[in-house]
Image (cartoon, rainbow, N blue to C red):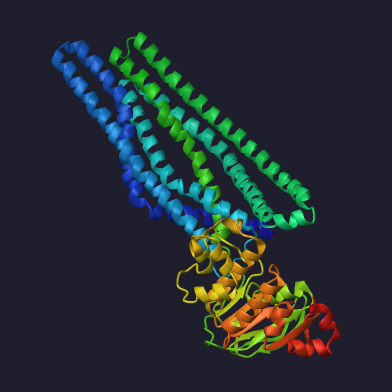
Length: 570
């Protein structure tokens, strides 16, 4: 019986091969030209010792200055051909290689940025490794195939030339080449599997680093940084050990290849010397054979390296297939919600949500006081379509339409659920607030979020440079910047989760008032325990144990509900 893991492995192997075929098909023109030019280069390299042998024979017979001049001119033509063909051949192949790697990087990144998550068991750090190292190694196939063909041309030309001198020399080269490739093709399979495992472990280490950086502040807060470091050290050690294994395998492969190539060259040289001593070949043919034995080392090295690179490209392509061919977590609908519509949660059961039911009319500012933080996070995930509709019972409706019937793109355009830990990107304040550069309410969003003091603090204003993850901003400044971005999006329905936990009470009062004013007439939902935001809302819903237990205005609930008063009073 075939297990799911085996089926997944076979599927990734098949799809990895499809990726390699796609890369080759897309670059067939560049590969043809690169093969022709690199074939000329290898043929020229091989022709050099052949020409030397012919020159020696011819000069010894003719002994004329004209023959010497002609020989020098012939060598100049060969050297020029070698130089130009290498230069332009490598330019074509490396451009195609770089372009193909860029294509796969963009494609993997696009999969990660799609609004519907894919069903792939990889962390963001692992996807990053696939989008960089694996994309580069997969694109190497564009360069590997022409180099393989051109190297075989050089070996073939050398074998034919040696056969013309003596058939035994040509057969020795052909038999030796077949033996070398047969040996190395077996060894290359080990390299492919080892490289695949190394990439996976490096990716896991990268994912662990990303997680640690994200949670560094809370880790320091409760003293968990040492345990986290030990956890990363373990993962990193595993990656190091696998890298050493790969290096060892590569070393054995390279050493074996060089040893076999040198053995073949020595065998050709000794055989040619014996034939010359026995007067079966001329001095010129001996010079040619010795020269070819030296020059053939380079194409043989390239030729013998190719199986290794093919296996590495295949291993990387299979890892890319894990991302590119992964099915979406949910099959989204195709409809679009009507603009300015209401939001309805109808008997939703998911984790701690126990038959949750409420409706937010269009244009209303509703605050939801959730007593359990876990419930707040799960409600936000459901509304953000981070949880597929099939994963929970009940229905979420936007404008009277089931969320499952709507395309995720249209839901995100119509309803923005601002994440609690919104990322801050390297760039400027302006590009963080308005990434698309199309918002008409940037200044209003800055004022409403009370980010004006940050803008005024720096001479560059909104063009002030922000470092990665907002490392040069305080926690409150990062939170207000994230809020400004959500407000500048100016969506029909805006859902905020605890947008003011990192600001002082005075600023919180101003932010609450500004949100209510800026969002007047549009649907706004704030999941919060902030008295200021609760007081600014038109209506407050109380969620306890996953259900709505109370409803009213903030001041009315303070007067009538002791549990609510205890939960939200600071």
